Image 1 (cartoon, rainbow, N blue to C red):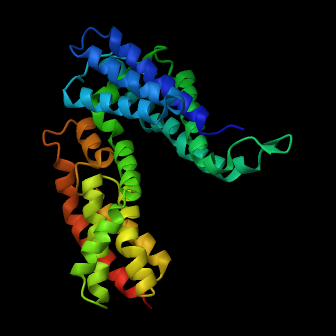
Image 2: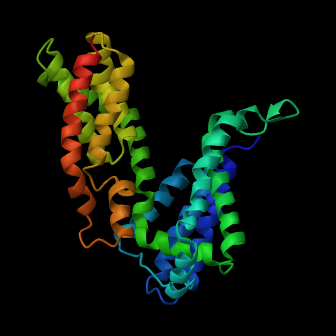
Image 3: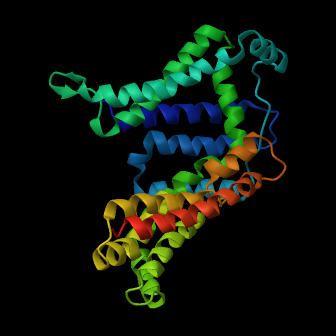
Length: 317
């Protein structure tokens, strides 16, 4: 049965290629730092399950040390020239986006169809992971179509990928780190501590105050952790389940779904959500790294207020 290990192996090989390319790139004064960082990340994908908790913990500390010491930089990978890209764009126009559409289409089709594929009575793909596996297959298909259609230099995908990942830098792994932090917080009982603090703040039986603390807490913890999925276990254990659902009889579906939306509002307002806010700023080469966040605050705050009202009205009908 094909499962996540196949996807991890593929990702590990890609990062290994980035590490080797960085090591050979003498145009990057920090090539050794880049090679070490992407090499360690490759190791985590390829052999993380065999390293054990201690080994993975040391690996993460090494990644943090490299990033904190400013050991990463950007080189100038050899790929297609600006003139070649301009000519290709002028000739093909918007058709250049067609390979990119292969990825979501494959993910959708695979999610719906792969569960039904079996060999010898056993499923070919892990039914719990068909969406992620379909996404990975879509990437490979899109790459194959692009190579056959556009005929770039053989190493262009790796070099362009390395150029892209170098421009993003350590922020590329921040979402995974923060999601892990959320699990650690939940296991450490942070939700219970927050619940005790909230219990001292929320007036007895005051539904609006409880909803406000829950919604604002989701946004606030998301801003700290950078990930609403990391914030949800904490706030659900602190207020969502014991106060709103059990204590006040609220609708669990509404509280859970709209509570996550409140967390997403926090995502719009924090640099910790690197994949949404820092990465776009880096890719667009904005002078102000927080430019994306500033543009989103005017949307995030009213939307957060709306989410609060929705929970208050529809969770207690």
